[in-house]
Amino acid sequence: MPEEGLAEAFGVTEAARAKINLALHVTGQRADGYHLLDMLVTFADCGDRLGFLPAQADAFTLSGRFGETLAGDGGTNLVLRARDLLREAVGVLAFPVHIHLEKNLPVASGIGGGSADAAATLRGLMRLWGMSLPVETVAGLALKLGADVPMCFESRPLIARGIGEKIEAVPDLPAFAMVLANPLKGVSTPEVFRRLATKNNPALNLAADLAGTAGWLAAIGAARNDLEPPARELVPEISAISAMLHAEGALLTRMSGSGATCFGIFSNIAAAQQAAAALHDARPDWYFQATETVSGGM
Ligand code: C5P
Image 1 (tube, rainbow, N blue to C red):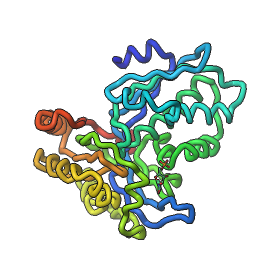
Image 2 (image 1 turned 180 degrees about the vertical axis):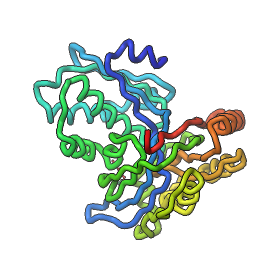
Image 3 (image 1 turned 180 degrees about the horizontal axis):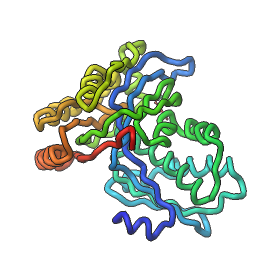
């Protein structure tokens, strides 16, 4: 559906931007099994889109390239869980709603699709239901939905620590042109964590004198995604994808989240678009998307 189409049909719309882990260090594990992470995160200008409309009864519809993938999940969708959780918190104000999800991002792919959808649902329904909750209440609801939901609620460059709930904005992070690439093999996040060889890796330590895009690229290049080695065991195509992005001229490539989506950073959006087109020609059955990330100053 074109952007105006969704806005015309649904009074309230929200973008659920793809979440990109520029770095992800696993630094420990909590007693409950969740892992302690240091993450440098940014958000892309591509993603899912959601529409919200008052209705006689609750309804949920899907469209988009990956909409079919979610059609059979019988209400376990994070969008519906976010709706129900928020409704519990606000009570009578929460009239029935038709939610539409345009699913443009591959599912279970390390770029936060489900988490971004849940966060966008919280934002959209607070607007539709005409209410504002204290920031800490919303942050608590977001975290209940998943470790990545609080940062997707922010949707701007940030460093997240803890399991993802300790968030600090990074206003200096520049925008990057990139290609997102995925072999369309879903990855189970718990399975990737289970395969980690070591859980106590060095913390994320960004240089103090970060200056401009080159400075940030060097700092990101020196960081890691500790989930990449175990994810490569599960999805060997990740190695091929990194090599393909490099061959197309990427300045830096890395996997995002628990995979399998990898990003390649390019010098500008035209170069990224050209690379995405070439990669699509080589593997039309995979997912390639050129995009720009938001800058910290937005
Ligand atoms: O919080 P979320 O539902 O996104 O996490 C999915 C799974 O990933 C968790 O059940 C847990 O097994 C693993 N995980 C983890 N440490 C984190 C985040 C997720 O071990 N910080």
